[in-house]
Image (cartoon, rainbow, N blue to C red; front, side, top):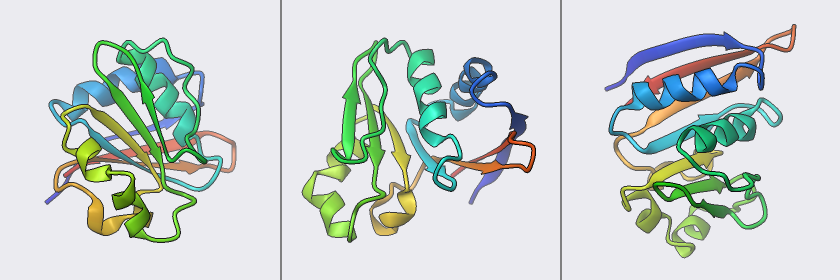
Length: 142
């Protein structure tokens, strides 16, 4: 069961600091975040702001080739990009379940590539680009 938590129109990245703080507050104790959106929609840009809001000073980059990046802060943060996966087994090979159930923050780009591996509880973030270049960001908590 899901509930719509939040919907906003944004001019990424200008609004990101406030949006990131709101997303973290709305998520409560949930630390798994699934990011949906077309290539270039702003998923990684928003994740950078979330990491900063969580206290990480690391250089946040898309883990397109490494599949997962780890960032330091008061809490560990794991950032996944499953775009290049050929099948779900590749996610299991890197130990995705250990990351997902570690209690640390996990930001997952292209989760549609691993539907059978996703935890039961998560925050779904869908970013879509409007004709004027603004972003519509919708959150659902599962």
